[in-house]
Length: 593
Image (cartoon, rainbow, N blue to C red; front, side, top):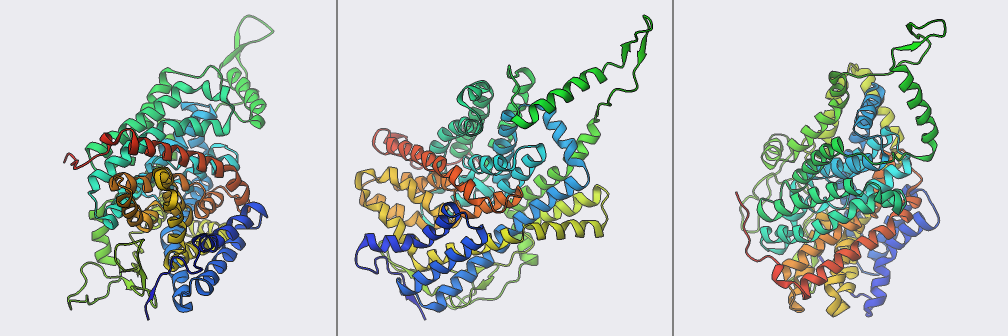
């Protein structure tokens, strides 16, 4: 049984668009409007998507249910597993007491919460995005900020905003690779064009991030540090995307920005240290006590001699070795996710461990590489049609059970090794892991169902209907092209998936409107990153990592307008490239090797 997608089942494009939007409206309406628990919203949204696909878009029920199960399975292995493992690592660090030392070591760089936000959420988060992607930076950096003493709401919401600038090259450049694959355009040109859009926003986002937490006057107090963060990140991102490769753009930018900022903070300090309201008086008292305690002697009232006062509080001083040991879990994590992202290592491990089956191609030859499973009742049975693609093409549904090379496994192994090195026994580690699973049980249900919802909208063609609505904007298409990518990420939770979903549509529409296909396909990825902060999957990851399950609606309402505003900025940048500076659009660039 095969089925062709229909993009206007009701005969009026605006009616079909409204129905296609219904699953998302139900999901986000319940989440943000009625403050229903996220896992219930996800179930309701998924059920709505299946019903609309069957009743309105005439998708066979078997295909609709199979696409939901396929998306759920993908979500469990590729997304949920990362969150579980990242929070597990954090729990081990807390259980062993190492997180307290980490907090103090970061505070020794700067006690200012605004600067800690930049170092952890923006710089460190970008490095993790470059290594792993797929929710890992929000989970890891969010848990990290909670340990540093940030309020859970800030840790969740601000990490969602921070995780925008690096997403287009996340997971060792996976979104760019996918975009080049589906559009048959030069990957060098695509990466370079993205590298001429996002570095502009990379200077803006650090300001935006700090301003989201404090007032404008308090933001300008740390403007020099913000500029160092943004310019060092943007400059590296531009250089690497235009002159090196698309694999290590975020890793290089994150590392350079982190080092540059730490060096800068050795020579520059804000005039006023900013802390949260509740901790200011407490910190002032601690600082006063510590200042007295560090003076080993005080003048005794009985004479002129100095005597040691034993009734003063002790000051905790940590050696370099103790600090290194405290950071060890995250150092191991960084090494694992970096290695797991390298194609050569991933391929070697996949060949040795991933179940593969011989699959015959139409020409009678075996399909090359690890074949994986062709998902039952779905693989190559749904056809995308014009105008989304030039000619009808089957939608693959191949599930590779890459249990060892999954990013979540890298995080999990890093947690196990860290626990053993830090002195925990196997039984204790298992107990901590069990506690992590129990705490995340509702988030697991929510994320799984949301991925299932996204796949139903994809295979039923409802996502394409929403994207096609933006193509009716004519001259303003470069602006709204950013929102096609934004919509794709909001629906799927992945810039890679958005590029696969709408890359071909952007190319076709650009050719019809005499625009550069390189520009518009790059726009899909660049605009998509701004939808990352509002996709339900990322919000669930953030709330799970910061122990805020149930607050998804509040966080969505907080980040939504930030997302729309930043996507609009991308749209304006693209309009300028399209109509004012078309000579800056790359054509035929090659990387330096």
